[in-house]
Image (cartoon, rainbow, N blue to C red; front, side, top):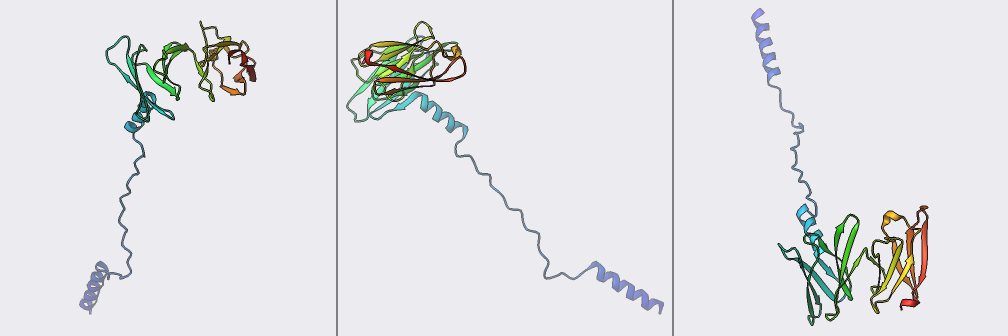
Length: 220
């Protein structure tokens, strides 16, 4: 009898060690490989676009390309302005600051090449699409957004006097901006032409927004 119970006990143990497999057992899902999405632009592409933007400029009818001439202390850049119709190509060698010059902006009248000249100082050279017109250079110049025939600039670092220059006839008009913030170095927030007036937008020394209208009839 004792032997009988011993055999039953051994059979029980063998059943516990080898349980039946359940047909409904859920298998552990495999981990999926999740691929990381690469950014649309890598650092090299971003850098390339940046350099394209400072050495190339396109207006309605012209394409400008600025190329540095290595190992030159003067005449360090070559600017090519080509018409899109292929009829004209202007090449100018510029005496601008080596490794520090770039195209600031362009339009159908001129291409502007700028460079820093120390501290807050900056200079821009205006190269015209009229091949017979000499370059013009200004310190602290500012673009009039809606009329390329006009710019504003500072002379002899007199930041209380903003000079309005008309490229059509080379006439100039001085505007008093002594109420502007001095540390802006004569730079306006915006300059726009409205009929025969130039409208200046800037911050005053009292932190007030100023809108000043200047009649341009004297230089038209």
